[in-house]
Length: 122
Image (cartoon, rainbow, N blue to C red; front, side, top):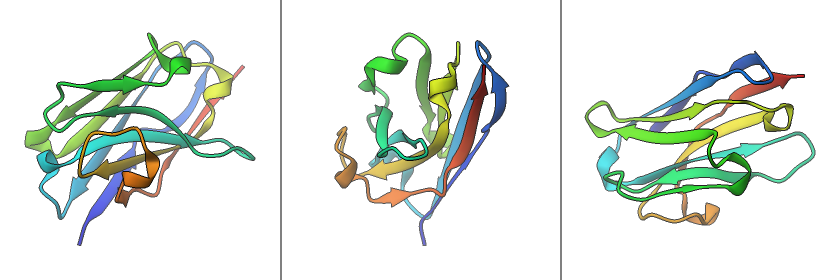
């Protein structure tokens, strides 16, 4: 059974940093592209960043370019998202997901975690 578990969220002041982690089990981690998505209250879920199976390709939403860095450690079955210079508008539930190929299309992501809450205060 595949399990995807996020951690690292919390409350931080604007301008601060957080590092999210996502650990997957029950699958061959490096067979999957993985990504981060977020959903703020009253808004649709949106893609934040994704990374290919071996880390050679990455994508960032325009709103987070230069502030967020995605990385993965396939030996640890873990995905990371380093978030710097946080803004209040980044407040959302952040989800990790895995897809069988590198894509930004949410519908292709097969396995999802339960999310970790990020709250940025002004």
